[in-house]
Length: 249
Image (cartoon, rainbow, N blue to C red; front, side):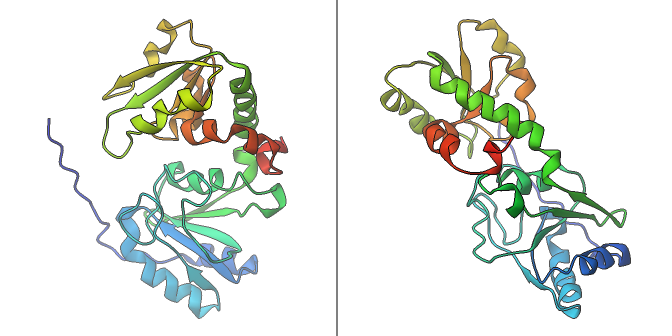
């Protein structure tokens, strides 16, 4: 079946509310990394002017998988995905919901806790702000670290591979066998990953996810034996040895 994806831009150029701007000013920020959902990209210029008027520099970038500069995707959870080369005091996200801005928190896991930047979320539909702090994901980090440790000793690994364009990493997944010769890998390939079927394979010690990285974060409860992302499987020892918020929990 052929699928056509259409963007649906918000036709009103939103600007920061007085409450949002007052909060940002009160924090004393000088440079902010600003991103938006694709629907609200048209509002970034107006937001930039508002910030400049109060002597706050706005910077942004073209993240790894996004099509537009300033666009944030929920799958940009790895360090470096933002490709932002400026030092920022905080992040500002324009859009509704938490799914996308939580990626900005997850993407900072390689930092120590004192360096984690808060995420100010501005919902232009309701004119409300919400602030995301590292405490919101510390529980997730704690569970994920335990799963990384488990991977080192696990012997039978189930590897989930999707054939969806943009999420298919078959070749990289198959190379796991050469890197970890002490483990037995079983590859599960499908167009759509059915997480409720995983318990049928009770011989698997744990799973490696090669599809959207948020599966191993937001859907971890489906994996009773644990799941880590493909990128982390390749660098698991380095992650566990590095001083970062992931290892402070």
